[in-house]
Image (tube, rainbow, N blue to C red):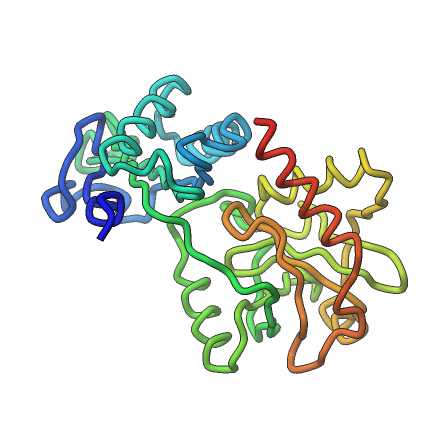
Length: 287
């Protein structure tokens, strides 16, 4: 077995210290465990190089601010990821996944919810692989686009776990949340793009969806390429009429959809998805 395979994801970083898996400890009173006060980011690492780092740092900072967490400085984040990549011998891997979790730590006092310091956990492993296309189902419960945590990438993923289990039980790959208005919000781990009535659309951030980094990049690339994409509300019932669709996320990049709720989409080879995927990969190579 290659050396990289033997060492993969055996070492992570906890507050700047490299630790073997299974040996790291955080307090049982950490507010991440007690109250779910933690945010995280997942980044793609191509041959040891972090992609779109600044965009992820900005989103991490927004989430940390929402919870009142102390956000690490950008140079610290980048150097710590580099240390973990090197420790796990992953610098030559075509694509790895780095995850940063910022937890609230212990409370300063019995009735004080503002922590004295935060915990920074960094792990790096081989990126998961995705099928060429994905099948989707819609969910019977909604995202609250008016909630205090909408748009924040928190560790509160209980709904996502249940939603993904429902998708698996239905033989699908991903599940789509409606919001309380009955419009499309997002997937459990992805943003959604659709061609509906001949126009490419994606839910606006006001729908309650996560401001996906890949979603943002795809919108910018499309604008540069002259591919019109509208950010507008999509009624969940209108997914029954979608002609073509694609999911986006940091690790899947852009993944075409072949069916929704068991209905095969009529345009299985929608050209813009391929064009945008190629432009995305070109951007990865340039950066």
